[in-house]
Image 1 (cartoon, rainbow, N blue to C red):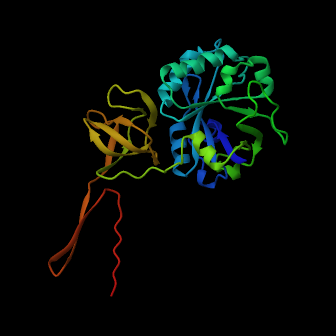
Image 2 (image 1 turned 135 degrees about the horizontal axis):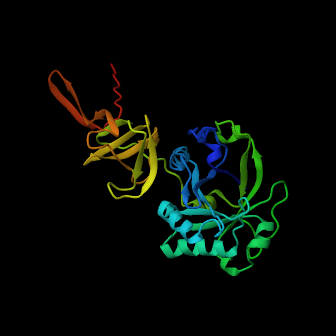
Image 3 (image 1 turned 120 degrees about the vertical axis):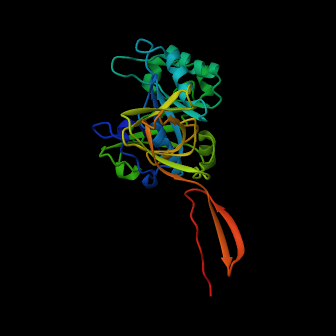
Length: 323
């Protein structure tokens, strides 16, 4: 079995809701699930957190919280998930109660079917437990086509939960040592899970081996946000809001188009996908601190050029001198 951790906002924020990043380089988990959406709302700092996990070489996937229809329409929730996560190869749907709200089979069916109708092409895994599924789920072969992730704390695996013959992931603990998973905000415990299968099967479930993103070449811009809040969109002008920036946040971009920064780093974290922020008509939203272009390196001896090369912005040059 292979160790997986799952994390929510309480694992990467402080008491005043500030961002306290998880140090995934110190996590013994091979893969992680991270809470991306709370119903039809974003989880703050999810985008940065999943980028950090992947940069550290972890297999990473989002999970979403499903509210009962008495709280929020499941189809509206699914619309939001698709908008945010349609390009993810794996999404886990958390099927359990919150407060006095108990999502049932119909809520789950409507949310999952809506995702599929919208065109989601990745895998969906259902998170629940035997007793909750017994009451609020249904022994229907429809669900057998989705893998299941079952919670049962202790050394005894979950009970067989029809229509599934065996769970794919077993959440065996909610009391893992935070130091073993890179938690730095003082939280006292971490959820721990076992994956049944090989490393290759785990990679297939999560959509493939993680290749940490390369730093961009070409021009480089560094800036500071100088307004209280600023939206990050997935396209200039009319794009969907996918993230947010606050006063004094640092950003980097590889180009600026009509005042829109194409961000490659947000708060020091490499971005994934398209991320755009507007600097303002008079640069009153983002202040340009550094602008660096490509550098041409010329090596010569006694006035004769030996070689030339172009070094991208932010690149490094190593010169070895031998006698």
